[in-house]
Image (cartoon, rainbow, N blue to C red):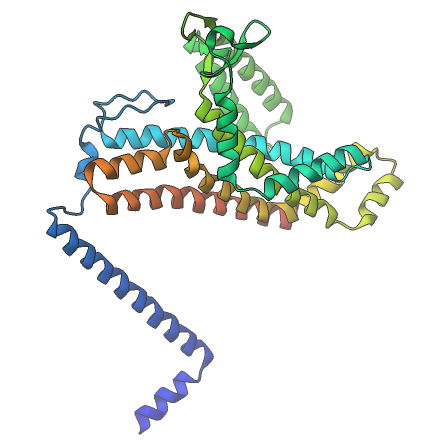
Length: 374
């Protein structure tokens, strides 16, 4: 009886009860995961498959259609995943940058007093938010397929071409590795000076940054594309698949980011604008120096969600045949039968960047909320 009454007294303590319930739930989840793992192991053993990652060293026998890293069929599955992950990272970073800039412009258009840009921006947001991102990617891919062949390629000037093979334009190529490396080293040194600005003058960082940028630019030269009979030589080519995926992700994400930015701007009291005008600031100075820094405190948390959604939406590249990470893992599973390992790799690859990005944006949000942008 004494032990029972003692247990009851502990149970009615809120802190003890909360810890006990969490421990029981955690134990139940752990037992469920162990049971699922044992079941998967037994089922794989029946078909002579074990759980392991040794197959990643085997030749993939797959040639990805488009990769920024060199990849051959004789390369391993691991290198195929690395090359495909680089493709995913490229399209996500470019799309995030373009969507952020365009989202700001669309938000400003929706806040404009001019009815024409406001109506266009409103219609754009309604259209892009009201249709699935997969449909938008397929529409852009269909548009790319209607472009003329290489011999009748559309040209912008003498160095930019648009055809069924994609968009071809001049690209920088490394001409002097020494100058490029020296420029990057000076840029890194300028960053160190900025971080130690309390001890070193800021002018030195500006001088180092300009010198580093000049050397880095001098280390590269532009390579212009040349039209051949059936293809282009030189320059940089963006395939129709990459262009369609990029356009779909950018236009879809821009609509959501524009609404996030617009909501952050509208959340500020009207007195902030009036106070800035009373001090004699122009409209553009008021926006960039007064409104936007304060709106960032409201904008950053939902923008983090949009960036993570963009990363997840990039897996829709399989619908148009762009060789991204999801495509590579699906190909690996079909060839080797290691579905459990493939899903684990896919979860880990997407979970780590998501948690990293969320942590960085949360830290930035806390800094801005506490200290502002100074």
